[in-house]
Length: 305
Length: 277
Image (cartoon, rainbow over all chains, first blue to last red; front, side, top):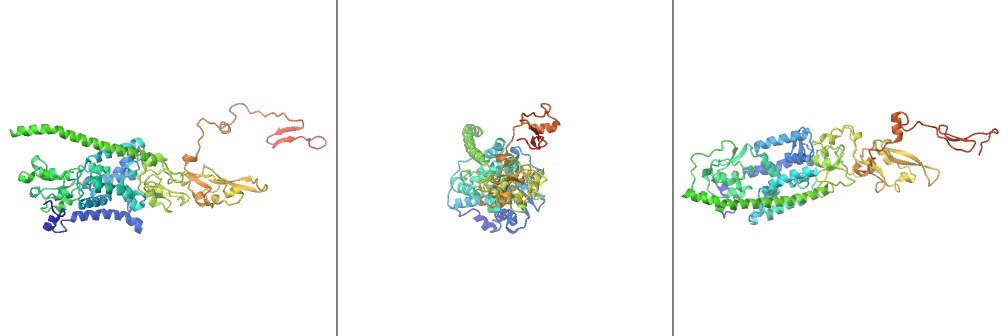
């Protein structure tokens, strides 16, 4: 089964092309749509949205501000104005519901870059394990919030590829492409899913924000798993799937409630037996009759990166 | 028996797991420490602002501004004259922050100050209500060798375009030593009124402007706090603070006396009506 040309092939045969790609396509539409909303202002003069992802004004009324940039500013000792505080509360309450790292999968423009790098890495067969811990991003998050305390200056925004790409597209790129090229090269050659899943402190921040978010991917039908590994192959945070899928006997419930799940829904797409679905985090109990077959012990075949 | 084995296994595997955890953590910390060091140095460098890059009106002082600005560009959007732009990566201005260059597009000093109104973070201080109170920089007529007015010509362009005409820039008369009979009208900047909008620099007719806006931190001097100006103290107090004012006694040749109010040296006339020389 591992010799399949690409993950999701079985799902296409079993469920049809649309059902096997709907989440990916919706996600791309969302990413491009958000970008488009910001771009029709400067391109066509229709100002539905002004500003960029760091802070914006919707229809001239509703402020939205990025809580991570806000925190960095707070760390310098600056107390922002009401508009920024309101904007942050808006964004925070949204992601408390839909899942913090939904930002990474559905909004962040860098995801388009890193997904492209991952796609190419896969096609070129550049496998290999990472020597980088996925926890590095949390250390980096800590550092980006600590250095401003000392230097009195917002520091991560000097190099943050996320705000650089978004601001670049809207206000002018300058040399920002260098930073994005670096991210692309890093993801392509150095570490699989290197940026988004190992280093990006913004993603780390949103994962902490959405730790208890309501909307989650669920695997209620996990008994039907046929061990095809397609979900592992497409998941940017592979480590989060196994416990939910295979450790029901250890008392793990059917909800993928890891803070690092980006709610991208690609696992739902590529799963031929339709194990996953988007749902709520509640009712995370192990069903009584977990009829587990002996094929559960397949962890050796999983490359946990 | 099986249970016992499992227990034994887990207790021996605890050590490698911990070692791996420590290895992973130390590597992470190392990488982050390296990145932090790099960022720290870069941030220190990026704190410097080129002298010709001016912040929008109401901007906090530069170090505070860099901690407050969210780099969202809402001030840029609401600037009706496209004066403001956001620094891009590779610029010599802190990435993503708004600035303008007076020689390219100066600030038009809108009455409603839309850029300040738009700022969500307070990096542009909302307590700035009257644009005349803005201090984006200070005009300095630094090149007296090329300024046309200093040549005795009547260019006056900086004086004419100044939104605070006759206040921020005044024309001070001076005699023209070259011709010996003409006046020079020297444009003189008064920091009490100059907002640093840059209209003068923008309008200067020279190929390279002789008058430019510089950051206040660069050109504004500051007298020590303990300095007291005698005449100010005196007028504040109402009379001299040191000793009673005494008329100065001059030791002048006979026939001359000094009277300040009647314009200085006075030659007393002798009986024949001729001034004593």
